[in-house]
Image (cartoon, rainbow, N blue to C red):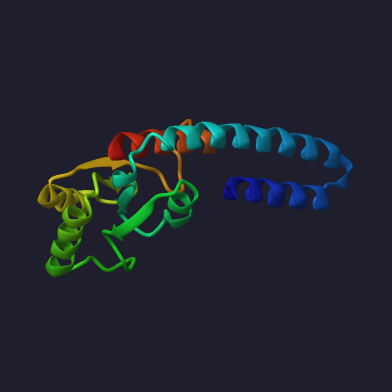
Length: 159
């Protein structure tokens, strides 16, 4: 998981600018890495419950290829291909058709974006929408809590 790389990079940066506290930074990094690894074990077990024929997802934008790859999913499409440019009616209709052809069970939206386009595609394709988070966790939640919400939403939407 990339979260481990981020923790290592943070540790290295802190240890470089504050070498006197390097041991504390290392200890904290090791503890958090262990939490991430334990989380990932749980997440892999949860995601394994998704049937093979449902392991396809559509997201609002292209923020989840690593997530999908890590958990053996395929991103079939995204609602907004180019940031700042809304898709045309033909693009939306093509995505809705692809959702139906592939059998994508759900479209995943994100709280920082207007859900109307994704909801319209989901309605046309006859599937539901569920919330996932790509960068900013819900208020009061940290990285692992955000990822837990994502795993739960994906398992719910694709099972």
